[in-house]
Image 1: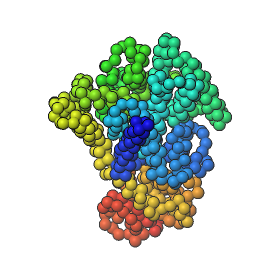
Image 2 (image 1 turned 180 degrees about the vertical axis):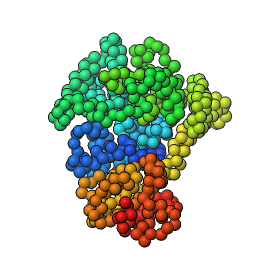
Image 3 (image 1 turned 30 degrees about the vertical axis):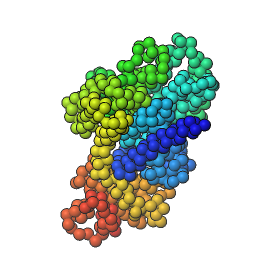
Image 4 (image 1 turned 90 degrees about the vertical axis):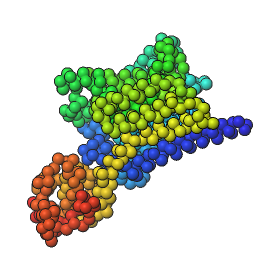
Length: 561
């Protein structure tokens, strides 16, 4: 009985430590390194749809963001409880990230406590896991659900004492639907599951599970597409909305010269992963890829082989799988967020071997991988990432150089190395947080909240740049009944000013630059103010940072012309 109690207590401590570490990283990043929004990014699209759910105005139509229900409805739930603002929006992504980290720990709970802690720190401190941990974006939900699908297959094979094919099949199918409701990129994992299915069929195992999974998935997706048909008139309108929302961009490989496709399918994605630090997780998982016999990999003979196969096939599928049913178009090779689902797979696959490297110096060839990405990042002048790779290389090299008997208690060695690796992994995020502070997003947001409200009693016109206009619409909760209207300088020329009682100009150098608006295009009253020419009808009512951000009250609306 005492052994059982000790076992339960150690597991509670395990999850408590992991939860505390991850939560600290997420909250610290949000409080001291919140990047905000670009102004034209996907985040505002998802936040808009979430507010429409809260306001009871949500409809399906030509906006492809409206079909990604996973993040939309979770965000709407948070908005309905806490209000429509950045913290409420960040809450669900942080909880999803924490849930993924806990799922990683749950998979690794049979190993030493340090293995799970090491894994979640690598997962959480991956620069892009942390960056998107407070963004209203579906990619972290795809990472959670995609990893969850593999966890179902893993538990069915290696943990379930008396597996129920019906229960596991229903769970697998439900998670697959949730993943698809989150974002269509989950199709990148379908070839992986298909190959695992083929392997099982050849071995004559889990046939009932796969049969029921296919049956349940067909039923769920028929119900889903039937609802889409009922709402839009077409079973395939979600895909039509994607086409309508499409535009020519650096990832339009079917429209670009063939060399762009060749680059993407050869070295392009590897360079992206290296430049944006995702390669760290893959390098640390190297021992898991080369440790197994080919027969074990083909037959998924043990759980380590299973996770190695999951990572290898997922990586290959992300590299070569098409995202279009009409023509061959691989996933965009300029944005790392589409590949975040590789991170939990890599840490689960690699953490046990990395811990053995720390404790017993096994798998020292991991140094070659770290050296390779450092040389590549240095040769391509990826300054921030090559500093991080160099730090990681130093930590790993120390392990090879340190004698096993240097400390009385050998357990201290992996702990010290884990701390060192954690610091090295955190470097890119730390530099990104420092840059985020220079954007002063939270200051302009707080300034607007201080003086403007969607419940303002008078009709108010705020003239600003296009990015700030988008911010303003969000801060006014996208409410149709809001009397505060944000417009661009260009649009203000066509507005009947007699319909408004109060007028403001909001100036923000950073968002003006991001909007592509030249200084010369600002109204004359702004030039007069900065030129030291006083105008009694132009009053700065609040500012931040030596006139970098200003809210100016316009007493004579003719100044806007």
